[in-house]
Image 1 (tube, rainbow, N blue to C red):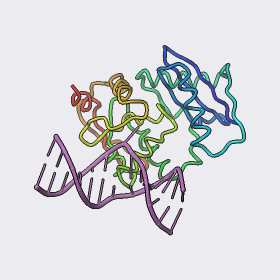
Image 2: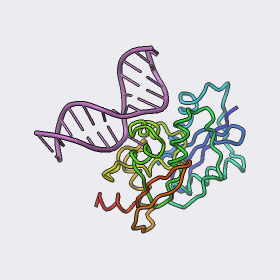
Image 3: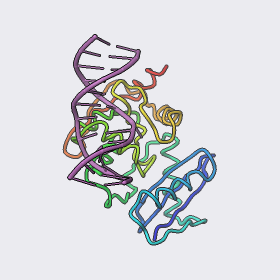
Amino acid sequence: MIQIYTETLNGTDFAVALCEQQIVTSSFDVNPQRALSKVIDNVMHKLPPSIVFQVVLTPTAEAKAALNMLAAIYSGKDIDITQLTLATSHLPAYTKKVLKITSAIPIGYVSTYGDIAKSAGGGPRAVGNIMAGNLFAPIVPCHRVVKSDFTLGGYGFGLKTKLELLSRERRGFEAEKQVSVAGGMLEVFPVEYVLRKLA
DNA sequence: TGCAAACCATAAC
DNA sequence: GTTATGGTTTGCA
């Protein structure tokens, strides 16, 4: 049984679907009710067939904590996402790997489709496809993945939203660096590179 | 700049 | 099996 919770926080709509305390999918939207319909859509069309799900109107304490976490991430706070358990066991191995690497991009930094591909093996377009199908926005920070020329690339929630998220995450870093992930290294760049490019 | 070709895991037939 | 599909990249004119 999958249970879906939704709540509007600071004017933004958030929704999560939980199964056995694990997050199955999450979403957000500036329009009322839209986050909920996206999550329902994911549950029905992008997950293994589940017998039944229900929308729960009054969130449990756990669900509430998860929703608050989503809101905090959305607002640009540095949240430790390892506190949240994501249900990824049904996903293909390569997809899991890419999501994991993406999760390692620190706040205030971005990486590129190509660099993630280099770290995961495979090609940039495959990475783009996985970002496009990300069930865990904004927990898995696919908004921190941009093109190799530091223009935005795409975003399922609109480029305007991608830019707003990145702007709130700006931390004033100046130099690129490497982070270790999944046994390898990933190149990351200050989000300033992207913001300056657009200015 | 702009365009064409190569790239590569998935999902859908 | 096979084909179609991108949130890309790179090379070259």
